[in-house]
Length: 497
Image 1 (cartoon, one colour):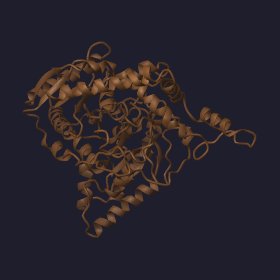
Image 2 (image 1 turned 90 degrees about the vertical axis):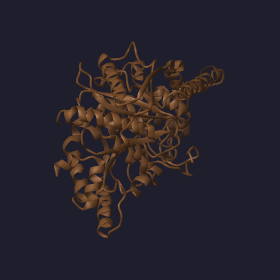
Image 3 (image 1 turned 120 degrees about the vertical axis):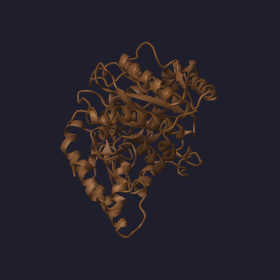
Image 4 (image 1 turned 30 degrees about the horizontal axis):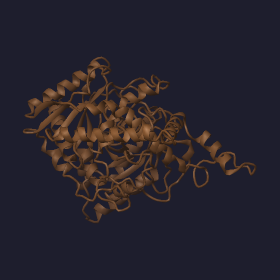
């Protein structure tokens, strides 16, 4: 059954629907793969063997009764450990939630179950999604399957690594400043940040509420579209949810045609700090789009240069508010409660033991930025920059259908290389952050290997809000052209684990 782990999600669902293979056989093949390789990769924090096989049996029983199966029924999935899952541990990669078993499902989790998707377990992540390398997890770093000594991106490195290691054909991530797209780029997989509000955040443990967005991770553009369609849509439980139809993303992914489209190359996303091999593959991708019939123009978005500092004021400010709920009084870790200490002392001891260094750094930064006398100078000014970035996007999209850039300035760096240099770590999100600040849609897809280190490079495609289908139209065309050129998918070049 080892070939089953190499199927795309679309191929897996088709095989299950036709009765060529059972959903249980598919689930077991992936559970066996996790057992074989995850000690090296550390993509999963919790593997729900019993729950996965039970869900797979339900799909097989439904098929046996002659009921119609959805387009992803029986397909295994790795779920980032930031979405609540009833009866299954949810830790957010933090000691402060170690052992917490949620009593309810996130809306996204419910929609996956309703679609017949088989959730294999919960994936590793930077603590509370704060990081760009998955080194900030309290449960150890995840390795990049292309080179286990290198990072798989962050904060959703576990989900991306599970895909690249063939432990699951689908995964879910969250993107606050690039945490779906950047891991996708450095692992040679596809990652999509949907329009903010188009996928429910109910049951997503909050880091920065105005930026966090759940989204699909996959090995192909079509698989990402199928997953996007399954999880998107209005949710009355989420006050920021958009009450509008989901764009026709699956249809767009199958179109694979960019003729007549205008594509803007973002001038500000190049130059110093960009790895030569990354820019080489990006420039080749731009030329490929021209060959496929698109019109390519350069676009300037001057406020994008201010996105990084604005983000690192807004996100920590919201984090300092959101993480105040972890007070040791209601759930999660509790330290020092021996009857001799006050509630304030227990809270302080618990936070000291439960939060890691990066989380503490951002809470302190955010609390300072929101404090009396500094609010207008820091947080208020950052929100004004956010408005300028949105205006730059509006001006750009008045003349082009989508924007393109490298997803991340470099390929995957060695584990530990930037651990003591937060500023260097933050620069990994240079190209991805503007889309979170504006709330529009963006995708990363693999476009080859950098010649100097033979590691994956990602192309970022950015579309206006609620025009997510344009991502899939462009991404599908680029993917098909590259696969024809190479004669195989990029992940087939990955070294065996």
